[in-house]
Length: 548
Image (cartoon, rainbow, N blue to C red; front, side):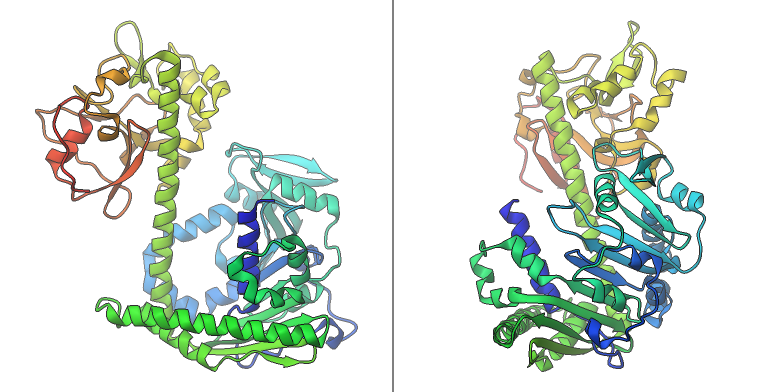
């Protein structure tokens, strides 16, 4: 197990111990022994979750979606929410209004690589309809006598997989983890049993962490910055319930093995609260100092949260440490802050994934160079100079797709009866993360410039020696718009004596580009045309101004 992973898991665990929750009229978290002996049977989705796991977090999605806060979000965002809803439906097969409950469950690092997601629906669903929406291209496999629906569009050993539990419940994960889950047995009892029971209630959120299990995984290797809070790791189980009403309020309970450990845990919890108060205070000051953010939605949320933390105080009652939190929430401010944060996070994640795709393409180009003595040409040409297939087909062996490369008929055009069938096998490295609709249509946004002096010129690939301006100064490929079918030999035309083609980036402010040295940079859309031309041409002998 890698230390970086341990450290991350430890921080997640400690964060849960002081997470947000909860409605003022919510009943307190109850231990299993406080509940009636004959509890109602658990819904199918919760009954199938192993109680022996490390962590689970359950959300009543449909109820939140139909709440006043959910209505505010839908009204505020309007059509801008449609792409996100389409993406959610593409992942789960249903929309948020149909998810009675979504529960994230994690066993432990020795048993699973990723969490499993259990879905309970508001009404019965048709399996075929759900599977066709969630994974249009799939196959069925048998595992421990159960049918797994496995996505075939993704390459790799961990394809998206769905196991149907009942007409109102299913579980989603990767194939390996679901097979291991079935091997261990569905719904085994364990430390998280009481959390599963609570999740069947009316709380908007229920979370539980098997603290003792986390402590065993972490062992004695504690990073210095976490050491003051390690008494919390002597707890046995942390449980939180949550609901969003007129405000955000709640209670967390951590059960310890004895009162001495509980006392030490309470002190550590107070230290964490003090630390959070200090950090929020600094954020509040920074927001107040910024005229653009001073009266914004985020500033109000931080102010309210800080006020709530000022009143929070961990308390000990025997072997249990608990803490309540009450935060007034302005629905409009919360909605706007959430939207702004979500958009920025999604954009940053997409830019990062795109940069990684371009890095892989740049590396593949250099591996082709090492194998053949020149970079690949823009296309495979016939004897008459007609382009048949894109350079993207030529580099397939260098992006771990040699078998796919062998399936192409290289003497036929990209849209021949045979080659056109291979469009559906587009590798993920050619798919832009910001344009899922284009990826679904097997189109790519990764293009190069084609013309005299550019990276692609003529019918042969250029040698690296021809890039006399320097590989770190010359653009190889960009992520731009519009898209093209990934096997089609079509690039961005370039001519020094003609107007510059309009480059449409997929992100606010510019576009990603990979240079001939393999480095990836984000180029501003404010870049002067003269400067961009210098970056496109490989041997003009001029110095590039520092603008970006």
